[in-house]
Amino acid sequence: MMPAGTPSAHAPDSAHTRPGRSWSGTVDYGPGPLHAPASVAELRTLVGRSRRIRALGTRHSFSEIAASDADLVTLAHLPADLEVDRAARTVRVAAGVRYGELAVAAAEHGLALANMGSLPHISVGGASATGTHGSGDASRSLASSVRAIELVTDGGDLLALSRAEDPELFDGAVLALGALGIVTHLTLDLVPAASMRQTVHLDFPAGRVTGEDLLTMLAAGTSVSLFHHWDRRIDQAWVKQVVGVDEELPEQWLGGRRARRPVHPLAGMPADFCTDQSGEPGPSHERLPHFRLEFTPSSGEEIQSEYFVAREDLAAAVAAVSELGERIRPLLHASEIRTVAAEELWLSPAYRRDSACVHFTWKQLPEQVASLLPEIEERLAPFAPRPHWGKVFTTAPEQVRAQYPRLEDFLALRERLDPDRVFTNAYVDRLLGE
Image (cartoon, rainbow, N blue to C red):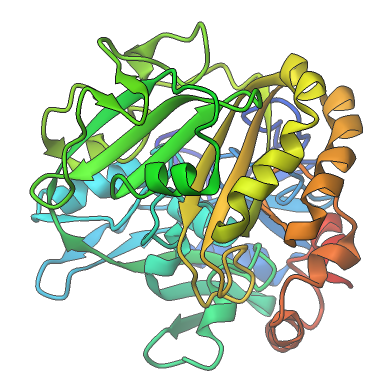
């Protein structure tokens, strides 16, 4: 595949025989064909004649959110159309552009993204549609920075929506699981660029998973990630701080020691793939992600699951799941705890709830993971967990739907924009209802 934003060398509306599999190798997107239009006009023509169609992003989802039994389309061959407005502090960008590329362009204008995910390799459109997030007590999901979208809807029509002009429905249209149309461009809010530093502390003593200590750790920087293995202790705390705003941490902190050399979240993986951990100031796009844009962080041989719970319930949720630690660890690469601030996006797992995210990076053992997940979800059930749309879970659809107070509003919006269900798939139908 060509880099995001590179014009296609294929003929217009080119199609490959099969779309292939996900980055992890665990999701087969379907028989295809996979179309690769080189312009919005070609995309509109394609959608206009398609009975059903779904868009693929950078294929980093672990669920079947993008799979289809019909046509698929990639936007990777569309021009990047990367337009930074320094005065307005915004950027308009094609949906297929990766966050890392967007962040570099913004930095050239003295601006930055408010937050980034662990991977800078993911596309703006795909991450926004699925509720992808970074970490930070005051940071919302990546989709919350979107202020306008342009999408191709049923029949090949082009529709523009913005937070300013369409406030009654915009919060339902940004994080929409690809179910309303194919987003071609997004306009995002930017913030003034600021220097950041990143440090990692290791080997916290047992007992630091109480509510007070966990929340103290997670509040230590603008963005914090805690890695552990369900043995009632934190192995690594990755703390990303704004220079001149966040207080620099001491060498010894809450019983953990400052790492003397770079580390990777997964044991045995080279730290060369990771962003700078020296504590030296640098641009935010080189500190906020865990991994560097120029490297592929791993081989993809993993499965991921993640559940959002209310932040005040984090310690109790971790304690409940830790009772399964002996069964979790043989299947696990590592687990991560992050935070996301409450937001208004209708299908956001952080909808109106300051959240903590309990994340699992599993070994590529799909049958064993699928067998264990119901027990983990049973332990989390008292805390009203909301699964990440792009990761693997077994929660019953009716339980998922019960967590979203604006679901009926979203379904009404889908009926308005896609009455013929051109943009649905089995995943969306199962979880949201046909």
